[in-house]
Image 1 (cartoon, one colour):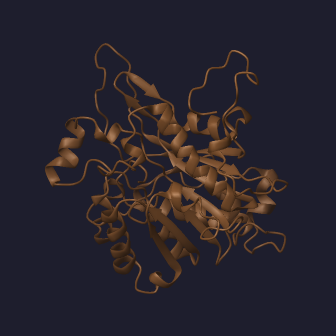
Image 2 (tube, helix red, strand yellow):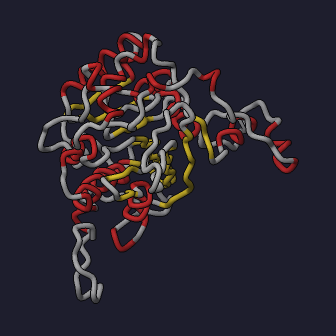
Image 3 (tube, one colour):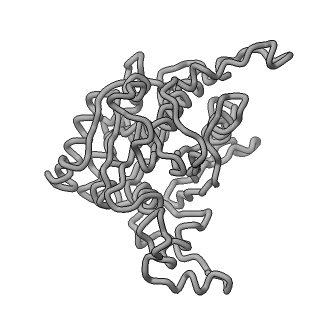
Length: 344
């Protein structure tokens, strides 16, 4: 269950533009540093590498549709580029750090971990995607990836609730691209018919009732997704970061600001949010085709970017093995005039 972008559709890295930021004079000394500062407790980047990654707009990278290593991941209806997640992993962890992806899909995060010298743990509900993730690591990285990367099959909500299997404060970073509600279950449009149906590729995650992508009600869906990220908060070390890669989308005539809804629920006390929002990076997708949605009478945007939500777990707070989302209920007496909507 990963980002709704096919890496196989992306241009090669050499075709991307805008990757080199202009460094202003105040940052010139830092940008000139080519060694890792002894004060750097976050990653293994030099000053030059660090400052380049803080630009709030990235351009999505990919291998190209015909690359041999794009053939497995394109079978998933919503993968994301391992090259982009690798940048996040290398910024928010040091070598040998432990990384968690609760919606690992066909293993982009684990491939990025293997190539970066990190230990990755991915959870995936659907057996087909688990099998492809193992195959991908073997064929695209090598058998050594099986020694450093772990794939756990099952329901992330239940698996992460086990403090014996996933102890408090045991991961250095969490990165994932969660499910996109039930929009993959809607009738295929001309774009999906041409790119996936015609090629015999899957158009939805699964038909499993436990699949969050099969929840009909958007509010219930949001609560379920955030419940998984609550568990991730528990196992994340204090002061460490979590990145969520998501795109907004349309449901019929309604524009759904998915990234904003996640931010609200994961940070606001009303919803029991405990994460601190550190920033949002725009991941621009220059490779995507333009479609005449709404023409010639109504504005409908071509969504050509994703949002990388960057959260931090405060240093001062300690984790609890209590299921956070289950404790998010706010009584009417505590919130006058507030009706329960399934997210409190």
